[in-house]
Image 1 (spheres, rainbow, N blue to C red):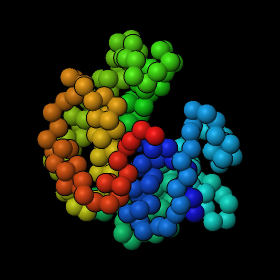
Image 2 (tube, rainbow, N blue to C red; image 1 turned 90 degrees about the horizontal axis):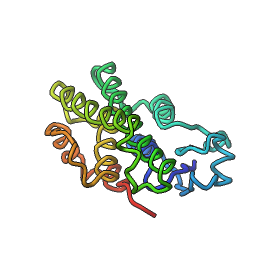
Image 3 (cartoon, one colour; image 1 turned 180 degrees about the horizontal axis):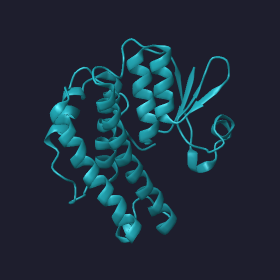
Length: 203
């Protein structure tokens, strides 16, 4: 199998971590979604990463659908241990944070032509995206009070990815809320190969 990614996408990272945790063997191909990479367009007409090319040539798209496929194909080890609803709720809230962060970056490009120009952030839509990140992180931290840090699961994976992506894209953010449980979760899994080897980076 081959997983099409770029090195900063939180969506691609979620899929990659899930596949690694499940023990799948796959190659990586780095593509540029902004440039309408031909291989990516062939795999996903929406030009979004990730795209997982199966051995039979079919392409799976969207990070959570890839995670669902992986869970179905290889139930052990499960990414939905214990209270499956609680794990799924946590993953959904964390995915909302990811969406708000990514949409903020896209808004910056549309408004200013660059990821690093924050003019969009102060617009009404940008303010709502920021609010979604803040309240989302606060909700995640509250939910973690009732969840174990082990074993790693889909909810904790998406939560860690959301935390690290926002720190990566908004390194000077003075609005970031206090999230001690989420910080502890991230630290607990920081040395895990699936986490350490997929840290977002430019280039």
